Length: 543
Image (cartoon, rainbow, N blue to C red; front, side, top):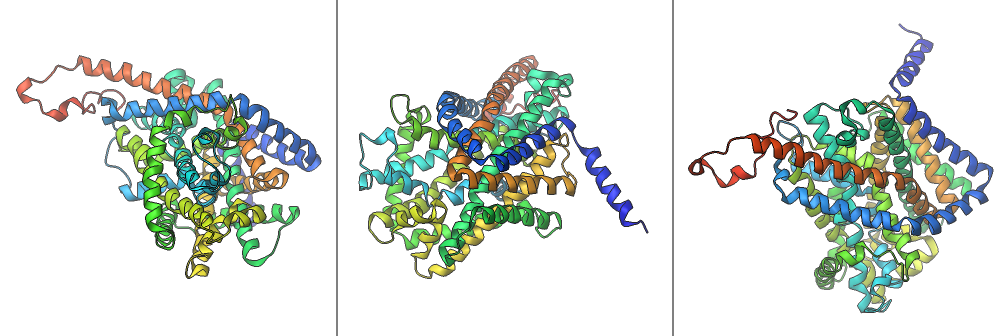
């Protein structure tokens, strides 16, 4: 039997040998340096965060808003064009469609969907988005539809543009050209096969680590804040700064270690559980709230979203309302882009065997429909119950923060204690999903794409993510979380644009040339579907 020292030596050796040195060292140094400097000078960090929010947020609004619209346009083009029929690898899909949607949804929207679902529309009802100030008045019935329309916009089609920019090319080149399962693979058309191990690829993978640190810490910060707010709301037990740091770090570490130990049955089952519990709570809100008002409001909000999509997408607030744009739309786009390395890799991992059209259609149509249903009913219930004076949700959020909105909402329904408990469970399971997938993602990003990083690697990132999230919450709460992701996501916005443009150009050059070289079948032998199925035409291109 080997001694404990020998086993520890093996674990440490495995951890060290698997590392991709540059992304790991730089990413860890940035994260540890941030925590250390914050402990040294909290005021300086707070001032820097405020500066980033006001200066970089407004200065980069054009990049985030314009860039995301370009990504959406390119994704839509791939979906409706003949390229949509191209398969991302051979064979049948690994997962059934329900499991695929559940994992897709949980990975992409886990933090925001539970934190902002009951609170965001309520905030817009109280403080109207500047784009609608000329046509509606805050805290009146005219504010309800625009408020819900903006929440659908922030979690609608645009939210998935950055994820697709990484997920589609990584899946395509990994499964069809045997490229490494790394973020830099998304730049295969630019770097070439030989360049994927070069200096620029290492820089891209390092930028992916930093972006992921910022994006994941923001998500964990919001969910952890919601958990603590729920405890305070129900028990009156407040958390000081030191207790907040210990609580958030402890919760993250606990879930990371429990998942490593095998307590969880995997992200697929947790994701399916999340969708099931969300559906139950959605039905409760639909029945417990003003049902007919919610249905009518939802239809009107979808119409407002569709008719104002381009105005919303390009509203920088240059002529007024810039601070609102930074606090909401710029923040959301930077958050989605900061999550693009992690969600993109995860999306690529679960999409083998599916067509480009299926992947993009799932993102743009299925995910948007699911988000719209959730925000219409949950956000709509919050707004209408506040408007009719049934429950003072604005009073609760002003006292305890936005994270308490869901607990206050479900507490107002018949059997409220049960629904509050289930909502707390939902917040917890979404935290589990984020803790599990984020530490796995950072492990993959810092080991050159290894699909099963060592437990020590995952534990390291779990503890560090908890520390960063808690520090951001203590330093500035929601505003600090917003500001950090705006800064860390900026370089990756450019990478996403280059990756998606390069991917579309690659498909146009490679697949069009192969299709052009194939002799056309006699007219009488052709069927209507022959013109859309490119798989046979491109079988020599990477398969």
